[in-house]
Length: 160
Image 1 (cartoon, helix red, strand yellow):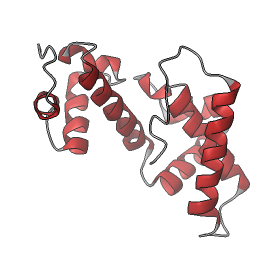
Image 2 (cartoon, one colour; image 1 turned 90 degrees about the vertical axis):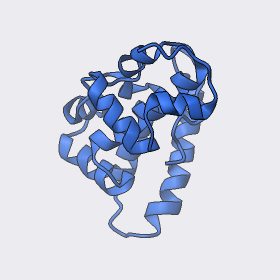
Image 3 (cartoon, one colour; image 1 turned 180 degrees about the vertical axis):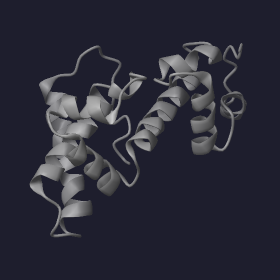
């Protein structure tokens, strides 16, 4: 997933230019990875793929702990079956795994920046509670958040 946090700026809103750049990059990626591999890759799949990336990359929808397939489908103005199919087929995982990937990457950014206490990271990165945060973090990094901080050499406030 090369798009993860693609040249993201800490801005409260996104411009049409940023959206256009993301859509172009996603379109090139689509052609390179999926269009040539299968005749079954439909135009609607590409549109939904771009929409998912836009919602995750630019709108940071993953920060909503209650984001679900239903909510994402409503944001994309399509049905749940199409969104689920695109996530499974083109991202290679289910929606929960995709969201957790984004959330963990965002949590790593928060930890590296030292902008919040360790105990605040789960809520600020979109997890509903501490337990799923720790499970997802260890699953994706192979270490606990505290150990990640030590590994990164960040003397951030590690107060639990």
